[in-house]
Image 1: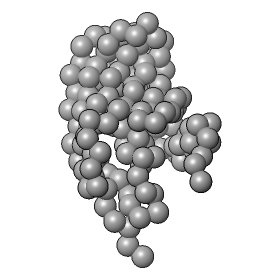
Image 2: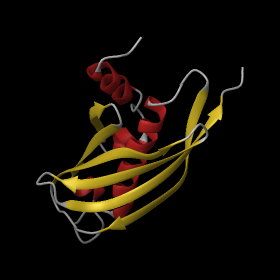
Image 3: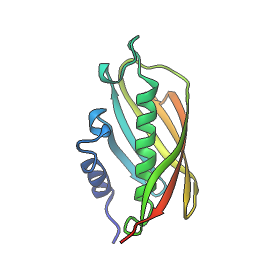
Image 4: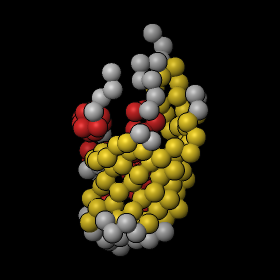
Amino acid sequence: MQLSKEKVLEAANKVSKNTLMETLNIEMVDYGDHFLTARMPVNSRVYQPDGILHGGATVALAESVGSFASVIFSDQEKFFVRGIEITANHLKSIKEGFVYAKATFLHKGRTTQLLDIKVTDEADNLIAVCKLTTISLPRTK
C-alpha cells in the first residue's frame, strides 16, 4: 500500500521528536517520486559566532533529508539505512529566514545510495551543495 504524500511527511516528522532534527527545527516539507525536501529556520540557534548560518547546521540539515530519502525509498522492513560519507561546499551565507534542502538520487543501488542535496534560501539562491552516501544494511531478526 502506497502512503499519501501527507502521510509520508507526517511520519518522517513524527519520528524526529527528541532528536537533533527537533533541536534544529528541521521539518520535512515536500516529497515526490524521486526527491525529499526539508527546511530549517535560520536564527541564533543555528548561528556561528559571527551571526550567520553555521556550516555544521547546514550539513546536519543535508544529512537528515538525505538519510530520510534513503529510508523512504527503501524496503524498511528488510533494511535500515546509515550515512557513511557526506561532503559539503558552502557557497553563500545567510542570516535569517529558512533554508531548504532538496535530496535527489544520483545512484540508488541495492546496498549503497548516492544523493545530491542542494541547500537554498527562500529566494532559491544556492547556499550549499552536498553529496551524501548511505548504505542499506539487512535487519536481523
